Every structure is written in structure tokens, then in C-alpha cells.
Image (cartoon, rainbow, N blue to C red; front, side):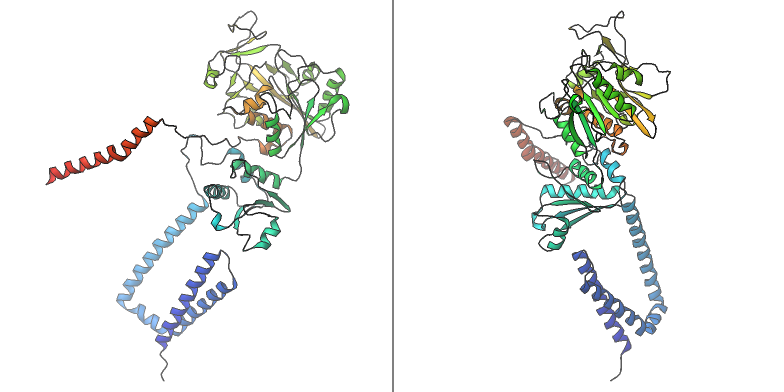
Length: 514
């Protein structure tokens, strides 16, 4: 029996090609290169190579024909076009550019997420343990969000794992329930917790990544005993929501009493939020001594109060005015606020206010806080918050808000100062703001960026400048509520009026052309 080299080469090529295709399909479906897929790909490649060697003479003869050369040119041209398209697709994937045209940037990640995820210095892996049958609209939105995160950093990775198929992976990450999402970085593994309404928001994910990648937890100590805002007060004048926000940014918020315990050594930042009663001289001395040793302090002083902290302010070249700021620009009306609530859209050049340039903050009943002598260079100081030129001061809050040149000062007025100075190898920092209500639960629920201002201030004081950002905003509800009559009218338009117009236009065109 004669050996037909040509037929053998064809058979080997067919079988080899089938093996390669089968191996690739198995790899694509299973998302990992298992032994069977490996054997198919390697075996198929060997068979294809053998087919080329055995049938080499016939291949050369085939391509020497004119018709084959023309066909080869066409194939080469097609392959070149495909290669160009693949290259363009690859480049667009590696250097993607997306445009979000929604008014509140609903489909774009926040400045905070870009800074934290884009600045990752070590690998972070988010693993979701779920079954394919558990897919919901919330899970699809989460997958879309993960795609956004992947674009931000090569150190970020997202995996979907079915715990029933791979229980050993669930055990490795500490997942205990279907639907658990674990954020892992090095030895740190943190369970991602969603909102009570369900699903995982961008803020949930970003703050959990922050927890998984930070090695130390800093403490923010809130002074009590003088009528300050309380971390446990969940009312409109409380700081309960701000305490939760600090926790989400991996800070520990504690209350301290200077009389009974002084300033503990583990306090990274001290906050005095709106005292209504005066400090004892020894308490004031504690705060000054803490600053002189390189400490970091935020003091919020409301109008018409005297906490007796002037001996703290004076060495830092800060002047706290004995007044109330009135904003006659009318900008506060955009928020339903009166002239006693100054709105700020101009900010000083400081890391604290970076990113706030296009944001607004407002301060319910505030006093001026300014640099006392601007010719001094020690400490380095910046006036953070500037009111409009139409604002002015009043000695006290009155029913009339008319400007009096004899007693009042015209704006722009400063409502806050950030100052710093070197103390040996440390950086002592002090921020004074003429209002404490801007960080209460009531104001945080409003449209301003007061929460970002407060958290950015804590970030700067704690020397966590990489966390200073504009944080994710809640999604804007775009639901339209219709009355019964409006709903009926819309249904008639949709079912009869619009189709009727199309039918009439079609009949008119047909009539003209018949």
C-alpha cells in the first residue's frame, strides 16, 4: 500500500486544528489553563507542525501557482487589516478614554476613589463568592463598578468565585456565606459590608480598600466638658454621622476630658468642636503644650461664645473676631438659607481645600477667623474660607441685617485659618474655623461639601494628605411622579398619538408616489 503524503498531511492538519480550537474553547470557558486544555493545545500544535513538515512540498507547489499567489495576497491583506484592528483594540483597552455626560457624573468614580485606587502601591484583590444563578441588578452594577476600578490601577484585581465549586478558596479568604465579598491585600482580609438598602456603593468599596491597605489606625480625640458637639448625638446638632464617616476612613474617634485625663499620648489629632463654656487656664495650657510638642488641633468656635482660648490663638497669629458674619449676596437662597448663613465658594491655597474649587460650603451662623498679622512668616498660615464681597460683619445677630460702616466690616471675610510650624522633626498644625455647625448631621445631609471640608481638615492634620479628596456623593433620584391624569395622557400619546402620526405620514407618502 502506497503512503499518500498529501492525504496524511491534510488529516494531521484537520485533527491538529480541531484539537487547538477545542483546547482554546475549554480555556475560554473555564477561565484557567487546566491539564486537559494543555494537552489539547500542545497536541494540536504538534500535529499541525507535523502536517507542515510532511506536506511541505505540496505547500510550496500550491503557493507557486498564480491563482494561489493572488489568493495569498488577499489573505495577507485580510490578516493585516485584522492585525491593525486588533492592535487598535489593544491600545484602546490599555489607554481607554470614557466620557460621562450625566450632570452628577453618575457613571464616573469619585476623586477619592481615583486617588486611593490609582495610588495603590501594593496588590488589592476583591473576591466575590456567589453562584451564577444569584445574578441581580445590584450584582451587575457591582461588576460595572469593578471594571471602573480595574482601569485605575494595575494593582487592582477582581475575581468571581463559586464557593460550591471551590470551597478551598472560600476557606482561604474566610468567606462564610453566599454573597460575601472579601477585599484582600497582603495578609489583610476585610469583609465588604454594604448599605442597609442592599448592594455595595462606591464609597463602601473604596473605604474597605483603604482599611485593607493601611497598616496603622490613627486616633482623633474630641474634647468634652465645655458643651462641645457630641460624637454620640444623632440629632440635628450632633456629630454622630461625622464619627461614622471618620470610622469609614479608618480613623478611631474617641472622646476625652482634659480635666480628668489630659491629652492621651495616642491622640493623633485633637478636635474642639464648638465649646459653649470657657476652658480652665490649665486646660488651655494643655492644648498649647500639645501644639508646642508638634501636636495637631482643630478648633471650631461659634459666634457669641468665649471659650477663653485666646492664649492658644495668639502665638499662632490667628485672630478670632467677636462678631457674626452676614451674607447679603443672596447666594444662600439657593439652599433655602437666610443671610445669617454665609455661603463659601472661594478657598485659600491649601491641601485642605484642594478639589473644593468647584464646590460650595455653608456655615450656619459663623464668625470671622483671620490671620492677625499677614507680614509674619511664622507660622505658615492660609486663610481657608472666603465669603462673598457682599458679606459683612455685625457685632451680634440681629433681626436687621443692614450694613453699618461705623461698626461693620465688608467682605470678602475669612472664616477659617490653617497654620503650621516646624517643631524639631515634627510638624505642628492648627486649624481654626468660626463655626461648628457645618459638620453636624443636619448640614451633612445638605447639598454642600461641608463633610469633605471637615474630613480633609482631619486628613491634613493627621498628615494623611493622600486621603484629601472629594468623596462619592449619593446618587440623585431621577424618578418622575405623575398624577393619574398625567399617566393616562402619556399612555394615550404612547399608544395612539405617536403611532397615528407614523401611519398618517406613511399613507401620505404612499399617496403621493402611487
